Length: 314
Image 1 (spheres, rainbow, N blue to C red):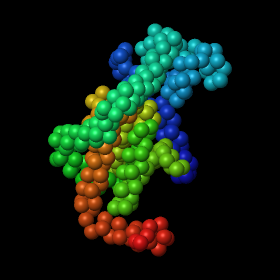
Image 2 (image 1 turned 45 degrees about the horizontal axis):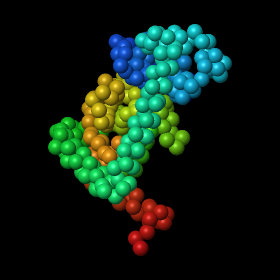
Image 3 (image 1 turned 135 degrees about the vertical axis):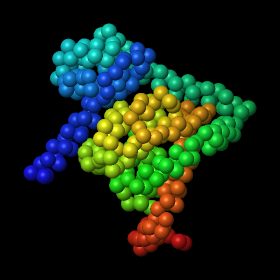
């Protein structure tokens, strides 16, 4: 019976991750993802499922006919029409146009920035390396000047005291959360990377409550699954920490603490240099907070790595 109850809890968590959101006012300037982040709770189960499909397949929705989408998904055309109106669109065509516009904007934004990068630096009159390094240093200096160190210290204490800490990030933030997980694993044993290498996000969140914490890294374009996960964790009393680069990040509505980190760069991608410095600082403070137990754990891991010939002193 306990096993069955646990399975049901995980199943409900997975469904909630796909569908949960907060009812609220629809801002017509918001993207589809941001509207979903405000309206999940207001949708029926059928509309939630259709909304998930749209979020996961924006290119298909933007480029294919409603009839073709309906045939492939099994949802009646009226389902997508109702979904569109529930999210504040006049009709499905407006939803399609919004998705198409945002896809084009994201692609063109990267492409335009790449084109500008080539024009500014390909003729040798301007050094991209110098410009990028300067921007990264400026980001780090700005972050260091603006960071609330008392808040950071409090966050470290909360994370250290948590029973379990879940790390989650998608898209461009994937690498940073994996790096944080790698660093944390040396010093503490209760930090877990969710949604990677067979680790189920639904399983992780189904077991969390107010004794646990979650660290989310998300930057535009925001991952819908990250926004859903932050919301569900917040609803369950989890201590949620969000690292992003804009105050318009929807995940900020569902966190206990957040850090806005500058990411300016001449690159066509946003820079993660300052975010990495913040992450390394956080883990360094965590090691200091953990004291002798962290030192002993690090020593044991290093010794095991040498015995397994994972690393070499030579």
